Length: 435
Image 1: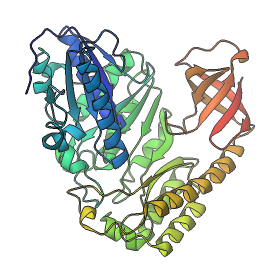
Image 2 (image 1 turned 30 degrees about the vertical axis):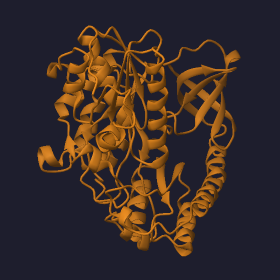
Image 3 (image 1 turned 60 degrees about the horizontal axis):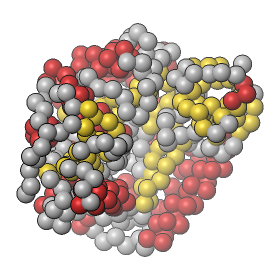
């Protein structure tokens, strides 16, 4: 395969997939910059090298990754770029299949091959840069990956095949990373992992997520901490008093339930029952008054029949989640579910997803209407059209509700917190005026 024969001057990093990939790309950018190479995100202008950080999680994500690779392969054939490198989950899993089909790609690297990738562009990997990175999504918020990989046996998930077993980062390294981000202007950090509740078991012999959150809350200048991807089985309830007592920890929890039918939960190998799931949710809501719960559902998994779908509808109606997302099941090679019959037709999966999201539209509107007349602390994210676009503590970027404040309310800086009164509500947005 062709290898690099020129000096790399500018690299453009294209990131696809989840927020965990975003963090990986930011680490890559920091290493490149320290090695004297100009590195930017998404902007290919003047770049001689393109690095695509791919996703291989579900069919749509895999197709987006392949389409992106092909588009840049065309750019290389046209002579607009000199070097094309592919990394990330898709590369980890499918290099042997893809490399003969796309010869324009100079090198393919997996999820654990950052030092080798850097060497390809003439940079030495520096361990001393651990925790050094600049947020690519915003100057005032950032994602922080507290662990890598996953030990869970979920039937539908290929993440362990691409990311390996669960490996926690040390608390000391994470606290230092948070301090570095705050030093660079970050005010909000989203804690992410494939399973954040497993944090610490491999390093400390027990779950220590509560202690990590406690220590992070003491980082001076860090105004919001938000917890994502909390697995419901063996949920560490020790985090709830921390969420309750620390003013800079958002009353927000992303807890992917996936399903509620015992029949489907067993087939999914989720390690939890409907009864236990409901007990966990009830305790969270009881111990943290006013907490916003976000969940994700996976519909159309092998073994899901109409009665199972009816159960999940009743569950969504009962719990009225503040935020909810839906995925349709797709077969993944190498997973347990991939050996089962995918018996739910695609049109049925789509119809079920649409029905759940229709229900969530009404639930979200109902929840938002309760906020009309209240005062909220709002973080201003950007300007769009005639509005400042912001969020409350109950909303994570990109996936949740936004607060729209008219520009004629006066000058506000992106990245600042302001107090606002909610004056109008829509299903997925709030209209407010600055106080």
